[in-house]
Image (tube, rainbow, N blue to C red):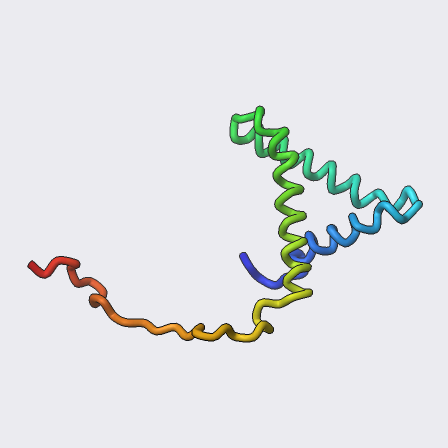
Length: 109
């Protein structure tokens, strides 16, 4: 988890694809959207039924795309304004002090 594999970029690429769907007038262009919708439907129903909570299927139909789109939007936002490029804030130094050694009791009584 958390690796930088190609699939980590799929939600961002899908979000960019969705942004262009409205302006492209070609039925073949809708094929990825149809595949995604069918995949979400299959996984939402499969997970709901596997967990014995079939009433959750409609919620999962909303949650799965919301998670994918939020992840994609966050990835794009990270590319546009990376956190590590920002200037350090004044007073951003961190100091650590030892309160008790590992394994010591909190009470010395």
